Length: 91
Image (cartoon, rainbow, N blue to C red):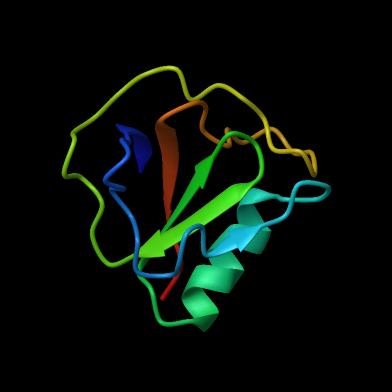
């Protein structure tokens, strides 16, 4: 879906803060599955290991700088500082 700006008043909060925090092995698919299994349409990854879930996300608009890879590997971006790499959960 793309790269989106985040801030202290979080853009995605429905799954908790964050919904899943897996420093060692976070991947895009782990986050997508977590959000999907908990009934959320979107999965957002930030700073290589934080997974955020919600049914909306664009309150701060599109951003750039989401090139950071996930701690668990893979070629897909996992956000950056105050940047969310947003994916459809598959719900």
